[in-house]
Length: 248
Image (tube, rainbow, N blue to C red):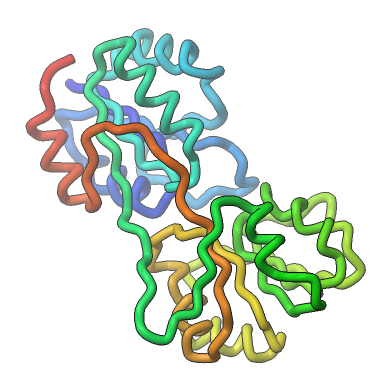
């Protein structure tokens, strides 16, 4: 039996695990970062938490006799992706990145592309605006320096501590979010800016389409640079790669 480690936390990781769960020739473990208090149910055994850097992950790959490593983490999880590439190289473990394609602007989109949250804060300007923050909870605190804005903040887990601004409303929810529902949300809150990561996920594209329909500007954080390893964009291609992956 070949042992497969999937670095997950995405819909694609869960879908891949589901595709592999019934195979008798594979033993599959799904690794989650442990940042979400109540992660979605998974179809294979799960380990939670970090590995302790490149060395810790390399030790895990060796100790658990991992035959193939699939990095199916979020496009913005650059640190773990770098660690995975380095640990795989160190141990001679075949590695594949399952990376969903990014969104691209279409006619009617009003995007401001920025490199990071500091750039996003700057893009909002000095005039008070109504801003929808949908970038995950880890980066939200950076917007406290722009306290003139009114914020609508959505995250999977509560923002703790709350954003240190006078006007902020919080929504705790997990996607998918439909375009119709996002349209209603943005219109109800009279949103003027959406701040988003370019996750590329169908489950969260509704806000982008709704912003387009309403003429709302989207401040889009560019994806970070990721290591160069073999990669595919679909679960099906990842399965095919596994069936032809070289022995470590």
